[in-house]
Image 1 (cartoon, rainbow, N blue to C red):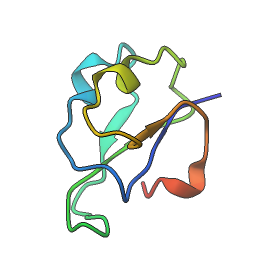
Image 2 (image 1 turned 180 degrees about the vertical axis):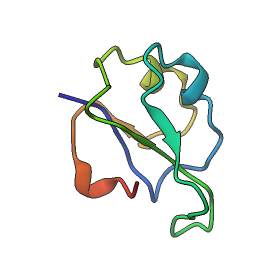
Image 3 (image 1 turned 45 degrees about the vertical axis):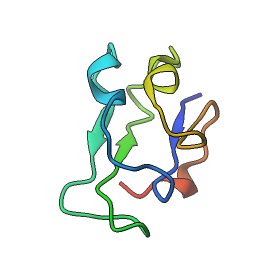
Image 4 (image 1 turned 90 degrees about the vertical axis):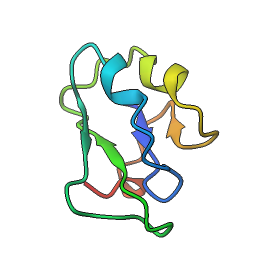
Length: 74
């Protein structure tokens, strides 16, 4: 199972990227969400469910501790 970054909640701060031990979090290059903000997404094939991203993210509800791929927009 993987964590999920909710694209339309993410504010593009990027605090989640440097804390990921397996580098599974990526910028959605050239794309913006409904807030017109750059956002990140998680590659579920690499995620090890460590929770580091969830702990680092300052935006409540931007990262879920369950896999809901329909909420990501890679």
